[in-house]
Length: 289
Length: 217
Image (tube, rainbow over all chains, first blue to last red; front, side, top):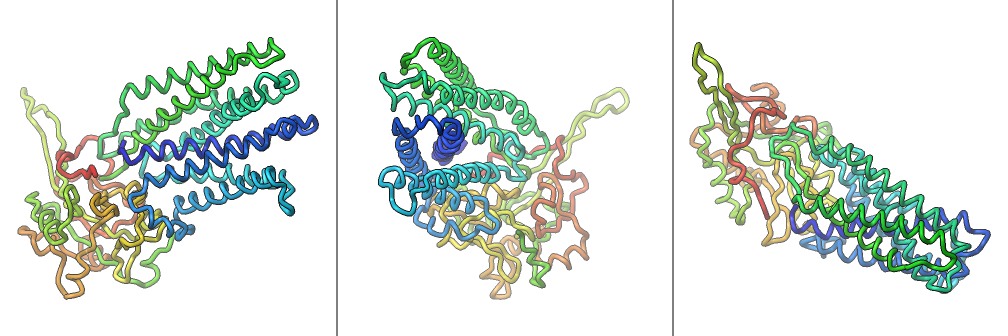
């Protein structure tokens, strides 16, 4: 893995996590709309603003990948054939739509008061963005990437990181006074989303393996350091079981149960995803010369 | 949507390489570097040493059956250049002669074209922060001269011509190991294969001089 690809690890993970927050919050919002819990606790404001900050950070990091960032003014010049051009366009649209949602929540700007519609638009753009991101890496001459493991892997990151991040926002927003009893459906929805992402991630291991075991290249396939694999797996298992334990314990309590466990779980899963993504980049090799 | 430039009636210049007579001296590689004064680690033209073989039983004895040959490779100025299609900035263009060129002023150094080229033609220049590649010595062509790699070759195994004419004269041969399958980019090159040559994606052969030719910038 080239050192110039580290910014891409953080850029892709942060933007996918943000897409996850926006998409999952929209889906969850559909189920709890009647109780108005989301607006009661200013959750909307929090997750839109957190999303905007995350996207700004992701965009800033992406510039570190470029060796001539000033020339990025031309980056939308080839929407016709370049997936990278499309990704940059979609990324800009996504960030803009999140900013509009923030403005709608914060200022209630006339004319953009229809927040649900902007939220739908942002969620749809987020989905489109991650699909384009995956297509960008599905290069015909790169066997390790040119399969649906890339697509599934990226969408798994959306729901894994997005789901846990939203849970963290929920916990941070609520604090001790949060009526978790009423918010159980939301929590369970998030835990189900994260669990499904975990299952998809495990199944995807086999699909990804078929891509990297291709033997028709003339260049030797690269290997990621063994320690990366160890950290990726151990942190993932620890993060998931900690989250599961917390969810089980929370069910027994009416008040918030040890929020530190949620923070730690998020940190473990995020670090796991960092190493998982680094392994993804490290396994790049192309057919031919 | 891709544009098949050759179908638009434009010329498509191509390299011809006679692998059967190449001695692997790498004069073409050096001449290219000298002409373009390319930086450390950058090789627009590279000579690959392809090698393979095994032991075969000859009577009561096992004898080595080894073979090797050379492939001199620069940018193939492909008919379907994936580098051009992938570049977000439109910094890669194909001119009227079918030559694929980089407009350095538009390159932001994202290196996505490098991922997409199966011939390793796109090379990153750390000192300039942009991608670089073979220009077919277009300045020499404008003066009516041939590219430096061709004129430098002591074995006369390199040449240029119109792709269609070269294919008529020598046949269509552009999938010799370690080259990839041609369908990815339709490379504008004709290779006269060595007698021991193997086809693309052969798993019994390897490149013997990877350390020498890889660009790690």
